[in-house]
Image (cartoon, rainbow, N blue to C red):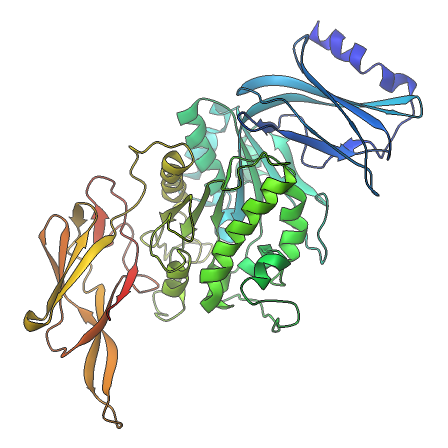
Length: 517
C-alpha cells in the first residue's frame, strides 16, 4: 500500500521532462537523519528560478506536513522548514517542482528524526574504526545500531565559499563493517562513531553523524575570513605557510579559509544539535600563540553561521565538544603541545568557561601511544576519547547534571613562603598516583643576572597529598616563586597513569598554569 502511494505521488515524473536542475542539496539522501524538535529541520535544494516547490513529509499513507516555496536567487535555491517533529521514523519526503505547467518530482526514503552531530578536525578525528584498539569487536557492533546514520564530506578545498558540497565520500548510510573502516573508498571517523553509538544507546533514538575532517590541517583552514580577522589574521598579513609533517603525518591543506569554504560553509543550512572537534596538532607549528583566540572564535563563528543558515533553527549557542590534545614525542619536550592544550581552553584550563560557554572537553594527555603504527601523534585508544566526549555531551548538551564530565581543577592556591610550600586545593576529591615523578613545576628565583635582577627558571617541585582535596607542592631552595604549573609536558605521563584523577569521575586533571602577583 505504501509503495502504491509513492507510485501515485511520483506519477508526474513519468510524464514530465527530466530536470537536472531540480535536486536536493548534496547532503540529503535516503537513510538520513533530520533534526528533531524543538528545532525545525531545513530541507533545501536547487530548481528553476520562479518555480513552485512543494515538499511533503509522509509516514506510511499519512501526510504529516506539506510546505510550498518559490525558487529564488541567481542559482535557483529553494529552502523549506518542516514542522517540528518527534524523534522516530521512517518517513518519506517528496518534493514536487511546478514550472511552466510541468511537474518534476524527487524523493527521499527511510528518513529519520533525531539529533544531528557534526564531527570536525584533523587526522585524529579522521582515524577509522579499523585503526583503533579492539577494532574487530567495534566493527561487530555496527549491525546493532541501525538508527545511527553516517555521512562523510569529501576532501575538497576552495578559495571561495561554496553553496553546496562539491563531492560526497559517504552518502547517508546505515552502519556496516565496510563503511566504518574496512571499505576501499569509504570510511568513517572512529571518535565520531563511538560518540554517536554511546548517545544512541543512552537516548534510545536516532543519531545522525556528519563527518567533515582533513588530516594535518590548522584551525585557520576551517575558519571564515570574518573569524580570522577577529584575531588579527587576514590574507594580506598571511605568511607563507609550510606543511607540518612533524606534527601530523596525514598532512592536508594549510591555506586560510579553504576548508571553511568547501567543507563547512556548504553545511550551514543544516539544522544540527551540536558539534565535536579534534584538532590542534597542526597549530603547534602555526600561529600557536593565537590559538587562544582562533579556536574560541571559530566556535562563536560556527554557531552564528549555522544559526543564520538554518533560518534560526540551530541553537545560536549549540553545544560544542572538543578533545584536549593527546601526546606526540617523548623525546621532544618543547614542541608547543602544552601551550596548545592551554590555549584550547582560552587560557582558563577548563571548559565550559566565560569565553567558551556551552562547551565540553575530553582530556587526552594520558592516552599516549608510543607504539602506534600510525605514528605516536595518532594514539589508538579512541574509545576513551569518545566516551569522555560523550560524558560531556550528557552534561552540557542534554542537561544531566549528575554526570561527572570534568577532571579535578584547582579552586585555591595558598603559598607559604616561610615554609617553602604551597597548598593547592582542588574542586573534588582526588585519586593520587604516586608513581609519576615531579610533574609540578614552580617558576623559581635561581640567582642574580648580570643586571642584578633575579633570574627565574622552571624547576620540578615534589608534591604530596595530605588530604583528599589538597596537593602540597614543595619549593625548598627558591627564595621566591612567581608561578606554578602542572603537567606542562608534551608527554606528561604513561597510559592512564597521570598523577591526579577524580576519585569519583576517574577523569584526569587537565594541565594548568597559575601566575602569582
